[in-house]
Length: 206
Image (tube, rainbow, N blue to C red; front, side):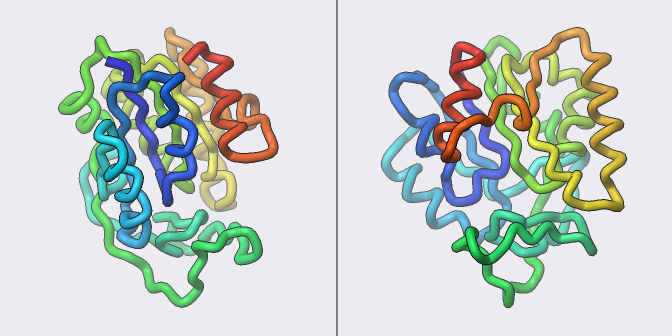
């Protein structure tokens, strides 16, 4: 099967592109831990049976967590350094929302339980800092080798205290035998999010 995994789906911005017939995805998994986003994602799922919504986040290990700025583009589990992407261009930003209690699942464990290594797997991350824990889990558990294209957006750099994690993960990726990853800085090119996603997928023949 050809599978798209959208880690950090928010309200479906990426679904606007990847649900198009030209990509022929057989299954689309959306990971979005915030309850504030689920209704919008469900609208896509109601129209497309390929879409499965996972109302939890992926990480390294199974645990409970708090999501700060829930429902916004800058929603993050990184405490004390929320990445406020700005009220001006984020219509989903609600400054009066309290931290939301969410569930996190171990990324490698979830992939092993739900995805076949024989599938053609395309992964997008945009999860405000959690990408480093997700990659650590997939590399440690060796499922990373089975992924065709993994788009990494290093949102962790928005949190000064944890910027070193980007360097650590980049070093780990460099040591991987399979070069199946790319960075949003390099491939997300275009005026709109849809155009940027399309450019990435085109570059890798998806």
